[in-house]
Image (cartoon, rainbow, N blue to C red; front, side, top):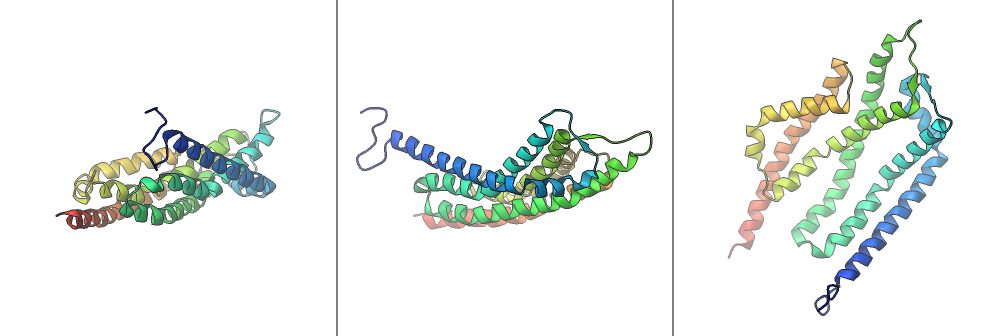
Amino acid sequence: MGLFDGEPGKPTLLEHVMELRGRLVKAALFFFVVSLFCYAFSEQLFDYLAAPAQGHLVYTHPVGGMMAYLRISFLCGAVFSSPFTLYQVLAFLWPALSPAWRKALGWSLGVGYALFALGVAFALKVLPMAMRFLLAFDRPGLRAMLNVDQYFSFVFLIVFGLGASFQMPLAVYFIARAGLVSAATLAKHWRLAVMACLILGAMICPTPDLVTWLLVCVPLFLLYLLSLAVAVWAGRQRAGSAAAQAP
């Protein structure tokens, strides 16, 4: 039997690879189309994201301005096309999943995207406060000139960092559902969780502004507390599934 030969009636390895390639191509094409659509509104998106900079943005390379618009378009395209990309990944894995995992992954797509959107919305509220503090030192003789590339790198760090951090309850659910961690273990190491939230908050919002830093860290710790409740729920589901499968 060859490497690409499968069992009779089942897809071969080559067929799996071709299916995966086809789904990745569809996801890439959809991302490109959505990015083009976002580029049509790139000026409005730029004005919205650049507003906290208070008119201090400059670019020092001939293509710097154009690249800023392209970067915004591609990153917004990645965000808006992510549900379709996740659907393609899930559709590829679906036949290999058990009914319980199919059900869990089915509802987690919507929950995960909602949590990400909530994190992004929170980041867009925090960003102006952080920029007001950082630009408070601007005065005659000390003028702020923000490179547009560095500014948007800072913006996307905060936006996508908080968006990803808000996935904590969902990640804990799957880890606890798989039996890799329990609610008791998470509660026992709450001091480490506080330290992790403080460090993560400093990484997401690298400013010396204590108020902005705490505005990021407090929601992260609240997400940790929510994750404890989610871990309890996942542990009960795991116990119920084990009891149902027991002879």
